[in-house]
Amino acid sequence: MENISVQHGPDHVELADVRQIELDKIIVSDFCCRNSEGDDLSCLMDSIVQEGLLQYPNAMDNGDGTFLLLCGRRRYLACKTLGWQRIPCVVRQKDQRDLIFIALTENLQRLASNPVDEAIFLGKVKKEFGYTEEELGRRTGFQQSGVNERLSILELPREILMEVSAGEAGRLKFTHAVALAYLMKTNRSQKESEIRDLAVKVRRCQLTTIELKMLVKLITGGGYDRLPDKLRMLLFNHKYMTAKVANLYLGIEQICQEKEMQKYRIVVPTIRTRIADVICKAVKSKLLYDRIKQQVIDLIQHEAKSADSGADAGLNVKTVAHHFSKLVDEINISREKIIALSKDNPQQLANFKRIAQNLIKQLKELLANVEPDTNNTGN
Image (cartoon, rainbow, N blue to C red):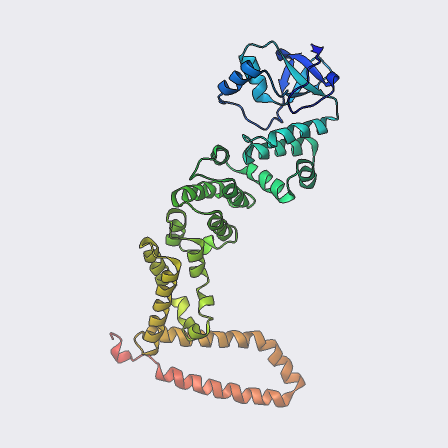
């Protein structure tokens, strides 16, 4: 090992900073974020043979005769494959933290770097040195949101990370991985299985990141668990069963809050199963959201009109029962107030008694009119 007096390439350094280091004394750092396994080094080797090593790897002196390779793994492997015994390296003498970020800065600027490599590197640095996300962002040039996103994907299943890292067209992208990572923050027992199922849907249906985020939000927000089984199955397996369609089912009462639909909202609780059937059939027929919504509205309007015309007497009875049930609830809630009123304001209590007695009278008359006809029990 000796100092050399050659300076070329983008690394302009003082002569004393460049040393010839024996290859068997070099230890490759875990912080080299570019994974060179399986790389084709032939082009790089040809370049080194013809033009020499134009840019030197960076290494840190461990003080025991060995050197930690901070960046330049592919150059190191190419020289080793060529049979070199020694390689010129820029030897850094700074604090170890700064050395690691020198390696990071160089590797992140290379075209071969990708978000998964960056995430793995950031995760190692954070664990090893206890940096906060803010410190990592400041030292690497990433916005803090970029650091947070990269760290978040590290919890995803390995095959998801490998796919994102490959960067193939029509497959999972980094933004997809960030959306899926929100599921890992939940306590859902099947979250890894759900992540894999969503990944399949992304590939099969070519979902955008926004579409995937809406599905993840539906799951993490509890909406998915409130869907009937038939719609839950479609959510993972069918392109046209989107989060927007699922929210149509979950928020059907909100549609009935619209002015022209308010008079129909009373029938919704009684036909939810049929609404789910309509949505299921429409999705399988590859209908888009607007047409599905219109079919649901048509069903609600039809059922409400049938109830008004007496075509569904059972529904009318349920409607009346619903109103009486609400009245009973109100009376139970107000019971203590009524008792207190009898002590504080006897005059108002007298008025209440008259109203209650009149209500009881009308209820008795109603019950007498709907008493089952024992002579026609078969009808």
